Figure 1 (cartoon, one colour):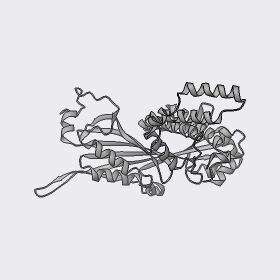
Figure 2 (cartoon, one colour):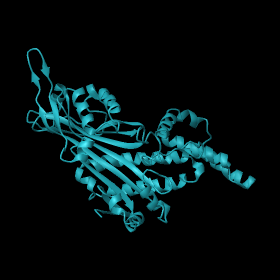
Figure 3 (cartoon, rainbow, N blue to C red):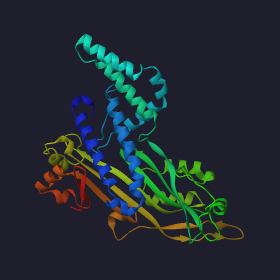
Figure 4 (cartoon, rainbow, N blue to C red):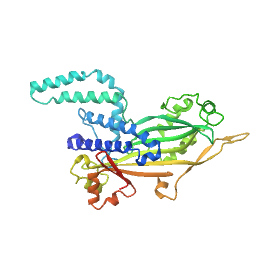
Length: 381
C-alpha cells in the first residue's frame, strides 16, 4: 500500500491512537496483564519501540514512497519495511553526515517560503530523512530480532538452581506480527550454581548483579542462547516446540515457563481487509482516529514436571522437562500451550458501532474486551 492512495495518514493516526490506548491499558496495574506479574512490565518497552518504529516509517514516506501494509493479514506494516529500516540503520551515520544540520534545513525552508511563496517540498523531504535517520541511529526501534535480556535472577529453593527471567523480541516475517517472548529458565551449570547459590538454597548476597543484563546471565551459554532465540522465535513454531527445543539444545538450561505475547492483528477502517465484517462496521465510525481495533494473544507453556538426569557407567541422560499442554481445550492443544488468552482493545465509538450492528458477540467471541474512552479503560464488557 503506497502513500498515493490517500489512506496512509489515516492509518498512522489509527495506529498512534491504538498504541496510546495500549499504553493506557498497560499503565493500569489493575489490568488483566498484571496478574501475570512481569508481562506488563516486559511488554511496555517493546510497545515504545513499536511507537518509535512507526514514527520512523512516517518520516520515511516523506522522502521514500515504498511503504506497504499487510492489509489482508496482520494489519501491520509488511516485513520488508522492517528490513529496510534495519538496513538503513547500519549506514545512518554516513547518510546523516551528507545532510545539512537540522537548524540549517529549517532556515532554508523559511527562506524558500519567503522567497518562492510556496512550500519547500524538497527541503521537507530532506528534513524528514534527517529525523528518520536520527531516530533509527539510536537503535530503539522494533528490529527483525531484538536480542535477549535478563531482568531477574533468583533461586528455586527446591532444586537449589539459579533461575533467570529472560525476554526477547522478533518481528515475524511470515505473518508481519510483532512478537515478545518471556522465559523462566533454571541453570544447573556447576560454576553458576557454586557462585550464585548458598548451601541454604538462597541467592548469594555477596554477588551483585546489575540488572538488566544484556543476554543470558550465564556468559558461557549467552552467545549460543542468542542464536537459539533468533532461530526459534518464528510465529509458526508453537510455544511447546520452542520450549522443547530449548530443553533439548541446552543440557544445563531447564525452561520452566515460556510466554509469548503476539500483538495483532490490527484492524483499521478503510485500510485493512482481513475481516470484512469488522472493516464494514469500523467504516461507520465518524472519527477516523477511533475507527480501529487492536488484538493480542498471550500464550503460555509450563513444565509440569522434570525427568531427573540419569548417570550410568557408559552413558548419561540430562534432566528433561515434561511440558503440560491443555488437551481438554482444543484451541490450547492446537496452539501447543498450557494456557492462552485473547484480548481486544477498542475505542468506545468503535465498540458502540459494533454493538449497534448486532454482531459484537460474533466479533468478540473468545476475546477479553477492553473499551477505551479517553484515558479510561473498561474491561470485561
